[in-house]
Image (cartoon, rainbow over all chains, first blue to last red):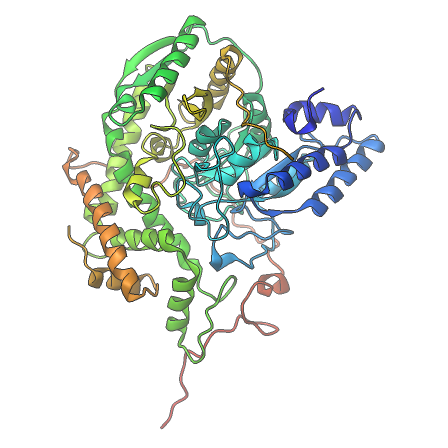
Length: 488
Length: 98
């Protein structure tokens, strides 16, 4: 039998329910693993005692003949921008360093109800602003496949934790690619669900018209299992949809499904190894009966420009709440006025990238620039959404690379914000258009770094997305990508 | 468009964000590059009457019912400074000297 930390979430649920292994043993195996891999920087707060208490409670329920739920005994790691009433929630920022929320996020409530064992909170770029987790105010995160590379970001801690077997499942959030890009860099499956599928109640807001919470896992079925546990209507998030969530783990044929290949996603800047891996993936799917169709989405060429107006504008508004009054840091100001206290608190509490984006958003929204920047971006965004909806009249899914290159090196893009922004060029369109998109591993570079394949579906088309992803996973020889082992 | 440290300081005042002098120069350089990039949107051909996208979800409304909310002590627990009932901030209104 494989080690507990190597097992899928679904097989752990089955084993714990059958009392072949206790939830406590499962929790211990993952805690030990997380301590061994501590220098990965995947966790900001690991909570071993809390996890063990929770695991014992689940074992007690099983002993009484109860069913603790669909995630019985499964350890789950949470991105540290999801509110937890019993653990710190820092968003990777000094300004929230001491914050312990008075309530749980909706997804956290759902995980507790489903019998999951929460392991702790994972590392991220401050307020999710970044593509490498290097903007975390607290710890450097590393890629388990190659320690001198970034795990991607902003959900880099969640992706690294799942990739290295510190947790079989993790939640992340995705505003412009923050689940899919780290999933691609770390060789795991990551999904940004349709806008409205998962409640954001208790997710610390970055850009509210783009933010979604989604799963990271080592396999497609595990990602579906986690999504099923957290998706569905919640009246506390006004954008949460009332649609019923379809079953996502049913397998089905891909015969006749049309895969659109948008030519703008295969252009300049795409690494030849990435292009070749995606081409191989497409051929495998076509051999199984899918049909490849060339399509064009010309407006997506402007996606990064639209994104870097819309997201910072919303962020500058959302981050106005950090005022040193109700929670978080307050700068020690002596006799300072309220205005001085506020400006000093924010100046000391926010890191460079967060300041950059607040200023950029303030610029796009400010008097005299609003129509030329924010107003225009919203118009291009509307046109982009219409364009993708029209393409989805002719194809069932889109198939693209997730990122133009495999993981880049630590420090490589840190001093060049524009280069960092451009690394999200293939992922932001799904957020701008509200459609679901999934990244799954489709091979490695010659250096052993994972490559990600992205599938996109029409809004609320998750079932088809998972069906295609599952088909690929069952065909591909290298769909599972463990990082190299290290001495304990 | 050019962005100088003075413009950064103006934006920082609007955003209630204290910026150090050396920081303003670096931020001006960064913002100028990013704004130079996003300026490309001016070239996108759009119809005169193009709609702006504001939000996606129009299928959700809710009744306005009173319900439980945060307990007073819980709401104050994270405040940097508070008394039994209120968040405390530096004095806003000066006493009339006259």
